[in-house]
Length: 450
Ligand code: FES
Ligand SMILES: [Fe+2]
Image 1 (tube, protein in one colour):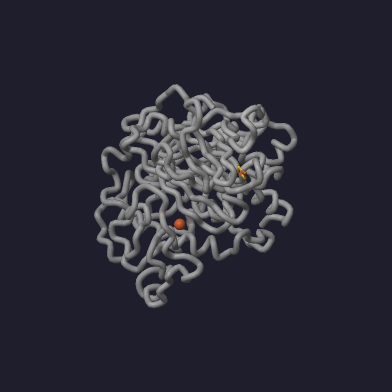
Image 2 (cartoon, protein in one colour; image 1 turned 90 degrees about the vertical axis):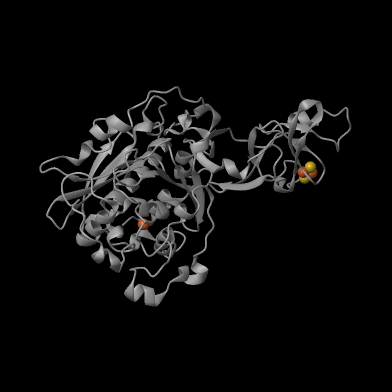
């Protein structure tokens, strides 16, 4: 549990809040590149950390991210015209009186004032810097004098054709949404289904990499995983440890990176990020992105995790782009009570919506003073403690953690495996893991500037 004071400190992200100030020190996914695909395309609304912004790609292909309300008298620039301006300039022109702003927020045309006026040189729209990488438009919203380097999780060297990023909206606080990705215990419950018992034993319940199908069986077999945590320079990683039907030790290792990045355990290891970006205190944009041209080159684990499940997975249906919400609170997530009784534990027909059902139903911000946390909640407790410490530290003048440009963000990986007797899970998915050395060697790459 958390005190009401700590809960507010943890969850509130508006300008001037300690957590809001911390989050603004990190380059953050703002929107998908596919939302502003071509020069002079329609602008899009972007709400981020409680600030209303508009994104556009100008006639020369540059992305701008500027305040939504026109600096003149506040009309929404979402309704603006994205067009070339005088003298080779270009930008978003307000529909009300024609003031035009470029991607840096400079007012480049003010046709409602006399031609001799220099007023436009003294007017600016608030603009944030952007960087396109991995199919995502990233931004930095902190103080310019404290700008941190762009953190390359691997997207900088991704071939553009392989970039795959998604965004989906969840109407609850970002920490609440993120806690689901740091909670291995719930895969033994929320996402379970009866047919798991009928999956034939394919012989992979032994030290090494099991199949995805057998993995479901392990989650169902041992429904009270033991959690162990290791603090790292980027945050922490933790193992959910389960005993298999044959008595072996199965581990799922998930990574948490400041401030809202998660890499959830997958076979044999993963670098696919799930990111929980606050739209405001009560809404979250859940992004995913890939960081490698080839994932799992040996195909370890066999057919995908959702091959046999009686529910779908949003990412399988649509691998990139803004994902629609079909199952929401308004339709009770489509819960089918007969299916819940006989087929699946949740009764919800889509995997991520099973998660949304539980995290959104807590309310926009759950009152964490009402919680009763157990041993299986260790990882979320650690995440909260790290974030609270970092927000308080920044307010006291300490630098934000894990922002150094020389750190190897590309080396943050999750993992899943059945351990050899006596083996330690901590090396799994690191540069010391033999499979990582073979298939994903560390790369020291030039980084994009901030
Ligand atoms: S309100 Fe935008 S130009 Fe007047
Ligand atoms: Fe889940």
